[in-house]
Amino acid sequence: MKSIIGILISLIVVQGYSQDDDLLNSLEAEIMEEPEYIIPAFKAMKIGNLQSTKVAKKKDLYMYVSHRFGTLQDGVSTFFGLDNANTKIQMIYGLSNHIQLGLSRESLRRTYAGSLKLKHLEQGSDGGVNISSYFTVNINTLLSKQQYPLMKHWDRYSYTSQLLVSKRFTKKLSLEIAPSYVRQNLVLEPFQSHEQIVVGLGGRYKISNRVSLNMDYAINLSRAEESVYNDPFTIGVDLETGGHVFQLLFSNAQSSNEPGFLSNAEGSWTEGDVFFGFNIVRTF
Image (cartoon, rainbow, N blue to C red; front, side):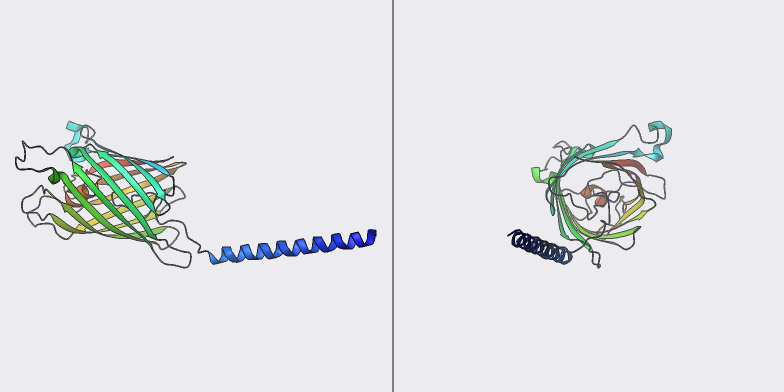
């Protein structure tokens, strides 16, 4: 009787191991079938001023504080721009792993903005690219009837739509192209078109595990020759410190809102008319 019980126990144990092996094999097969993704091309949602392809993960809450001082060209009279600062506070929430929503307020022109960012494609270990799209609506509340007696409510609005395509070429180098459409219901220059086509270019080069050099530039293909504004060029450094990313940058655009810096970059690098600033990104 004991021998029969021993044989039964042995059979049960062997069968159990066999089933465990089958289960492990099936799990491994499922894991192998799932696509493997490489480290994201960009750690922050912005390269400098230009949006990156990064999208907030589901239920993640981000707070962005963007600060741009006045122009360095003013010198000691404004303490190299510190007296004329522009501050933007933005809250970003991941509705899902592919959808993020954002709300912000920028002190320059007292602008309120809402944004939507969508992730369409993610670069895998076997190649490919990252593709996202970005949409924002801005409301300039500083405009007044005294300035523009015939102004209507909708004249305060401006819009930007962007297709963001990036690729991480090596462990250190990532590049992005961002064809963009900008619509301004009220242009600041009467000869400027309300609708503008802009092509953004950006890149990130990783210097160390926590430091990277970032640059972005945007070519406005619709800018009038008489315009006093310039194409925005931004150069900066990303510093990763635990739960947040700290971005230091120099740009010839003081606004960090898309319609603002893509259309109305007021500074000039060749004349030293440049704005120092930073972005602080905190994840909750």
